[in-house]
Image 1 (cartoon, one colour):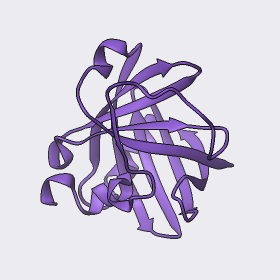
Image 2 (spheres, helix red, strand yellow; image 1 turned 180 degrees about the horizontal axis):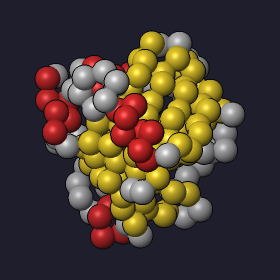
Image 3 (tube, rainbow, N blue to C red; image 1 turned 120 degrees about the horizontal axis):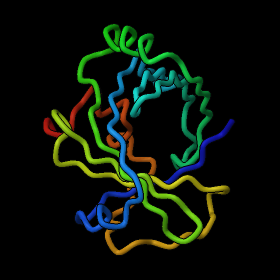
Length: 155
């Protein structure tokens, strides 16, 4: 399974009025090695464990394996995770035929708002909403695993 996504900073909160749903997310990392990241995530009333491989040179594609697990298991695994768990609210915004997931980070990463879009190919065209800002695809500082190690407010 290969995940192809692009990541952007967000200029303002106009996306909130366009969102059809939002969910609270808590996630932690058991491993943040460049070759393999292991994440535990609770999103709403569901939980997942995810393994991600290294990104390609542009940062748009990487191997991703994910499995749903019991929320209680995820809560226990979060206790074993590295410092600075990620807390955020994710907004779901449809634009054309694509879905933007807009993350508003909290706690140590407060002030950071990032939008991601998953694509079929690296060069797939998509409509860009007015609130979409600078592209940060491939900038490792914005990977959640890196934000866990080096929170936004410490930059």
